[in-house]
Image (cartoon, rainbow, N blue to C red):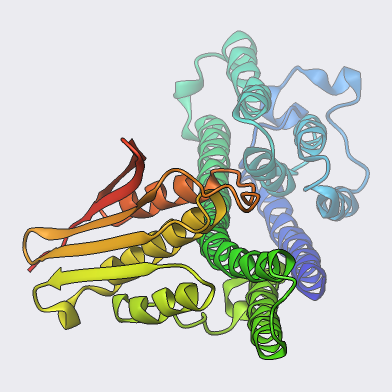
Length: 399
């Protein structure tokens, strides 16, 4: 709000400066016109010898006052530029108002569409044409004296400069507005991309945490004869999973509420392929049978993006196994190395043991995994093969 008020104040100050400068220049032009140097055709007895005095256009009681008053109306040049330009052009037929008329014409070129600018500029040129027509009819060829050529040529030059300069300033304004709009669009797209990435991260993390919580809660339900130590252990795991899920949820809510990237703070630490054993152990603690077979050349040098993608694919595979095939063993195979890339397989029996109700899912996790693999330059496939459900991915690993 303060910036808008400052901008408005600067605009008003500029308008006042233009009014004062135009008034000073107008007084100088009136002085020069009185000495015989006109910058715009004047339809007076001295210039035409027979002309529009009968219409009252050839006399002005006080050109000084009229000139200053004409400059004063330039205060409203941003609001009514076309009306001011037309009015000052007409009034300038009998009084030297070339300076305020030129400023008004410049304002038309800046603040109004080119079509309106063309019409107003054409109207401003009309007195020049009329001037030469009347000269040719009443006085003779205008080329006979340089004195009679100067007002028309000066007027055309001023009109051309005012319109050309105004159109140039207008193009600068439009370019600045377009650049600002494009920058805002890029910022919005970057923010949207970041939020989509965060949504994928939160889906993977929360689905994993909540599925673990559901498995442990189901274990309590289907094992009413559990010992006190087993109940305490299961309750501790449930509490830990819920606590971590809440922490992750707070993180994403904070990111989504922040209007700018600077307010989101440092991003949370990202998992790596070295964290797979810890991930598998969490599932084993929940009662799953998980086996990891990792045959990767120089595993410590796996690129960060590739390692994070491998982790998320394995995490989603374990989550899906808990949801749709509780009790089934899960086999994880990771093979490859540079420059051939990594091949990842998460496999489990597709049939359930029938003792537990499967956890419902929306399929968004697999869609997010496909997007992850594509963004990493790889590919992902999933589906049933016989009695097994396989989640297979290939990820590049450049040397």
